[in-house]
Image 1 (cartoon, rainbow, N blue to C red):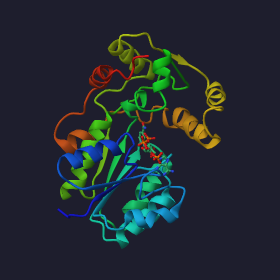
Image 2: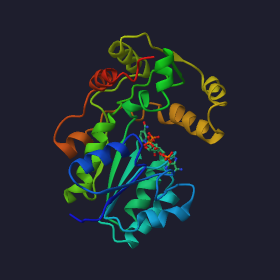
Image 3: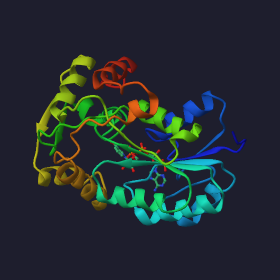
Length: 269
Ligand SMILES: NC(=O)c1ccc[n+]([C@@H]2O[C@H](COP(=O)([O-])OP(=O)(O)OC[C@H]3O[C@@H](n4cnc5c(N)ncnc54)[C@H](OP(=O)(O)O)[C@@H]3O)[C@@H](O)[C@H]2O)c1
């Protein structure tokens, strides 16, 4: 394998940090980047992209806040120009924007793998739902639609496999957990594992937007509303088998995530 580092865009994020840790543990040099790193990478500042992509062997690409085809096309073009061996893209299920971004990478001419993920378990412990768990109530317009939440540790292992074994080139791995749960069921599992009361409350999209307004910019609120009202309409409730296809073992269950995470103490008030 090349001595050049593997670029990790979103290197401190939920999956990026895990990919970084796994690669480093096996002696593979990495270059984790985001807005705050020494070599910066900012999706809103294309002038930061060429330096980050120079002198790397491969790239794991996670986008913020949600996949944009034009940006992925340009980063893929830079990757091809710099002779990267492979670009692994984190994508989302059932989102037209994500599918356009996947197509941009696939058409770029750089060797690729795509990991198309369901909702992360870790949104409840490392993301925007942690505050709700700590406050004892998660209020969302998510309805009773089941979602096969996935463990970010599984995503990271699939990504590392795709980066380190060329047999994964040209593959799209749709990765989910092994069973679908409603948000209410997921919250109940967390409450049980954490040993404290946490409830789920169904609210309207309008109430959700009003509650979020003081805390997030308008475009982020719009994006989250789309996730809850459009993407979470049942189209993504099916369990997919990308973890098993890539790694030869089943995906971790949500209860395993809840137990492990409760043991870290992150859900203690
Ligand atoms: N979360 C899910 O359930 C889920 C499910 C499927 C797919 N996805 C996709 O996964 C991607 C990331 O997921 P996530 O929301 O959970 O975030 P995340 O991977 O946890 O990433 C957060 C990181 O992004 C960096 N960041 C923020 N704005 C940035 C910018 N403008 N340019 C470069 N880096 C930036 C931040 O570092 P700095 O502050 O240092 O910049 C932060 O460390 C998204 O494309 C999302 O659609 C997420």
